[in-house]
Amino acid sequence: MELPPGPPDGPPAPPRPGRRRVVVAVLATLALLAPIGWLWWGSLLPAPYAVTDMGYVDTGGGAPVPEMHDHHGAGVDTLRETSTAAPAVSLTLTARRQAIPLPSGRTLDGYTLNGTSPGPLIRIRQGDVLQVRLVNADVPDGITLHWHGVDVPNGDDGTAGVTQDAVGPGGEFVYRFVARDAGTYWYHSHQVANTQVQRGLYGVLVVEPRDGPTGPDVVAAAHVYEGARLLDGRRAVLPVPAAPGTRVRVRMVNTDNGPTSAWVTGAPYRLVAIDGAEVHDPPPVTGESVLLTAGGRLDLEVTVPPGGARVEIGGNAAVVLGDGPGPAAAPRPDRVLDPLVYGMPAPLGFDPAAADRRFDYDIGRRPGFVDGVPGLWWTVNGHMWPDVPMFMVARGDVVRMRIANGSGEVHPMHLHGHHAVVLSRNGVPATGSPWWIDSLDVADGDSYEIAFVADNPGVWMDHCHNLTHPSEGLMAHLMYEGVTTPYRVGGPSGNDPE
Image (cartoon, rainbow, N blue to C red; front, top):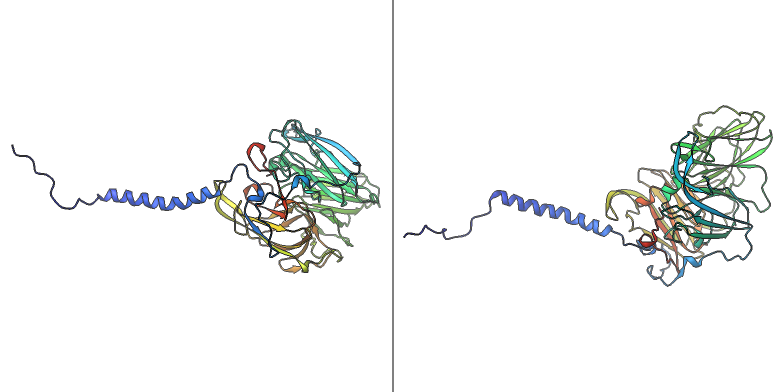
């Protein structure tokens, strides 16, 4: 029987064109996905993690510092108030998840302190000890209290995962510190901060001068509830009875994520304080508005005229001073007061030209991954979180920092634990009263140079106070030599400062 012929001798036949195209496509896909996969993998954060282990050391041109990952320094939990004086003001604040009634008749599923939003107004005299016992009744994610603008010891800063663990349901934490600087401040949660602050977990702290108040004042804490700006959690127009000739200090606080404007109709005003710091020799102002940055505070002084005066905040809320209805609402003036040139110069108490450290904080934006999530993220000096600078200082250093914004949006920058003075904007030097800030509105395209003395040891957040932005990467830290933290972000503690 004759067998069929076998395959011909010689080399195998080349792959069919379709198979070749599949192989090329697979290789091209791998070449494309491999770098993306590498970037994705490299962006993943450990759970939990210490903020002191993130990023890279930036010494600002100063002396070398110990290894950042050395965990044998003093813990931030040991950096507490050393005064043994009895507290002049002592109170308990109990946080609850609670429906908040609004003037519209609707309710907000929010958070309260002692049953209200905002929480109780705290007043204390400069130099006295304040003690606050925070109790979490039932806020499921935990809570803290950050004393915004108050240069407290680091262990009382109230930043979850950095200076303490979040206080879970049924737990409590006691804050205790000397109110060293007179001024207008506020307090708010720094655990899941964007959600908890927006939904009402905040209040105001007023530190009155050691010699007592110089006249009547009113607190106007502006907060947007369900699209409506209210000044005390209950109303958009706050009447303040005052006889003609009375000088009233209006303490304005912006608790929201973006800047707003304020202006006065019916009378001139003086801008007497910025972020709690008094302005030196402030002249009277007419026909100009003032910018109130997110997280910032401005104190205006108004002498009430016979017909009353109206302090507009954002154009949809107002403080009305006087015994009658006051003047009609007026549109915002075209001109804006510039704190860079307002008031008269005064000594700073240190020499910024003799800086020990100089840092850059350049804000940008680019696509990439943060903790495995793709998106368009904020950057610090070209790096995305967590590969951001750890600004390292030693106690007593004079520090200069240039903050530049090329990201396309405004950023209200807030440094915890310190007040800084503005030296220049876009290269133009400050010529007015020392402009002390803890919250600075940095518009897109602007750059500021600020300076401060590193006199409050700890690990301090330095972040945007549009509280949606830190969770999107716009956050760094200022860290002192010889200080570390036992606290961790994420993991069993559930700490989530933003």
